[in-house]
Length: 293
Image 1: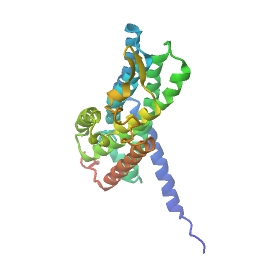
Image 2: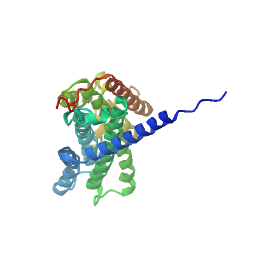
Image 3: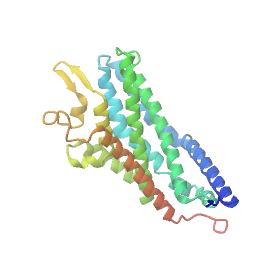
Image 4: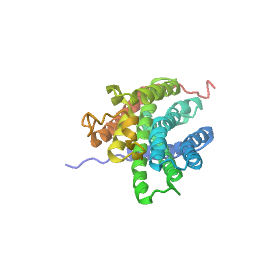
């Protein structure tokens, strides 16, 4: 029995929709890389590298691994990554509504859920690329010219950048969903970053299992080493800073393994994206028309 082929009309609609979504993706990326928001993002992301240069110039005896940990595994993932994701993802739909450009999107043959997903993918692409670039810049500021062989930190760099990219993608999905649930997504996002990711994630309680940074930290702990030599012996900076009890649980068997941490972040990101797409498809957007302008 022959399977009926798609009609020319449906094929034309599909091509038009794909072309429109590809154009929307490109325009969103360009929008993210221009304007005042981009200048704020660039300044924030440059902060760790600038601090590394300053510390090395004033305190040359600081161990490079310790400086890397403070800047690349504390400052970047705990503050800058969620903040950058919030600034970009909170405007996925709100910016289009405020600028009334959503009118031109809705009159095209594009599903509303697809508009959201494509704009979110463009946001993730932008933040992931910027995260990789500025993580590399931070490592360069920490290690170039220091007494540390490239063979060591050159291996640590892609691992750290990969962890950061995974985390910032998860934050984008989370804050993109939040932007559809509340009009004050920036305020809610800042509170979330300060209280949930900043405070509760640093406490040795089960509530940190709902945070993005906890799983990013566990991936980092199981793939990287932050043990430095001190006058009092070796010090595990990650275990102390992240409240990991190595005395009673030296192998961290009570914490999720590497594969579980990765899976949790990926599944949570996909879930937030799917839920956001569904909410967007069901929502009625109020737009200006020539009659009510």
